[in-house]
Length: 172
Image (cartoon, rainbow, N blue to C red; front, top):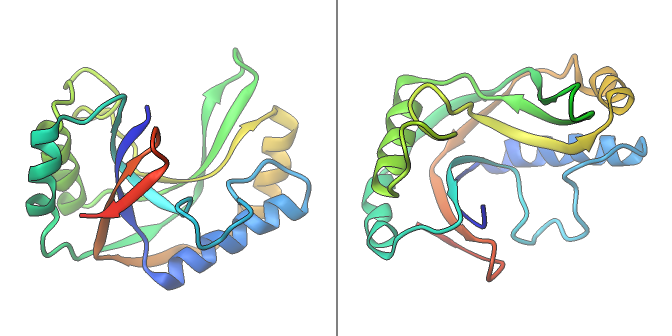
């Protein structure tokens, strides 16, 4: 999924999540931390992702997020994955508000997302990714490091489009 629509955290929340990424990396664990903190890779909440986003949707997205002002909490740690694959993704959940769910549904519908896929109603899990491809042992270590992390409040006023093919992003 090389194309996405993402909510950006406020500066304080981004700093806290980056500090947690750094903590994982310093412990020798997989982390979302990258070399350049100011680059396009940053903490975010993905509203929609797909291999492509239609041009008409791209033109309509700025109006969908105009006046964006969501007050969210970044909460507890969760894992995606399974014992079957032996690999896990560590995330911090974002408890869904009605406003967040409504926005995500509007974005998904506008982008042509299927109701039966990952971003359909009742299938999307709002989160901030902390680390990918953790083994079960690494997952346990990561949970020891971050499991008691305090909730992180954030005011979300910005949304961006990410084009993973071109490795470019822009604010909507």
